[in-house]
Figure 1 (cartoon, rainbow, N blue to C red):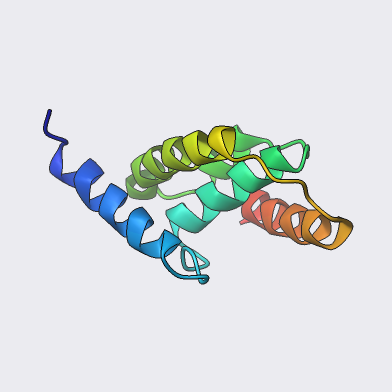
Figure 2 (cartoon, helix red, strand yellow):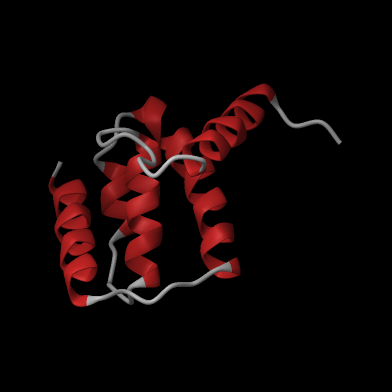
Length: 99
């Protein structure tokens, strides 16, 4: 089974990002997807449609692909959120919805 080039590139990018502690760069669709996924992990309400609706059309597909990858990782290895991380993720997601 071969992956489409864009999905293969995204998988490689996310795989390499997981090798570092930095993760996706802020301001990218991959960062937004990571924060939305983490918000779900933390039990926060997320208006995913609003986040996606504020993105330029060309970034929406990247967000959807990254979100699928992060969701799979999340289901396989859920983590608890402490209060500080929960507040940080909540701020990031609120900023994404206002963007």
